[in-house]
Image (tube, rainbow, N blue to C red):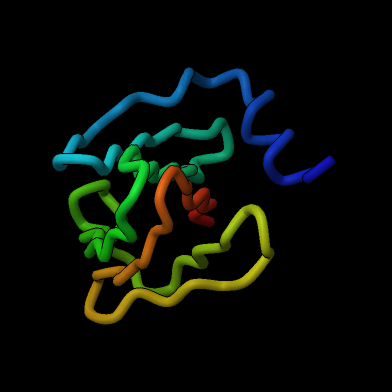
Length: 99
């Protein structure tokens, strides 16, 4: 029933594309029709918590004024020097919207 997740899913622009696979971590990006992006990170490991650094410039996100929101919690996420430091539980995901 998450309205933000539903709107990203129903955005007609494109399907999400896997842009990176780094061992057990996958990163998927979807360009949205209003110029925003969504990023989905998956920890495919079934046992280990993964610490991961996501360089936002790799995904064309270099403007410091952009807002990054955790889709599930609504919490604003702030990269430090363009890098998000994330901790991912086993079989977990982090879903973000970049506005």
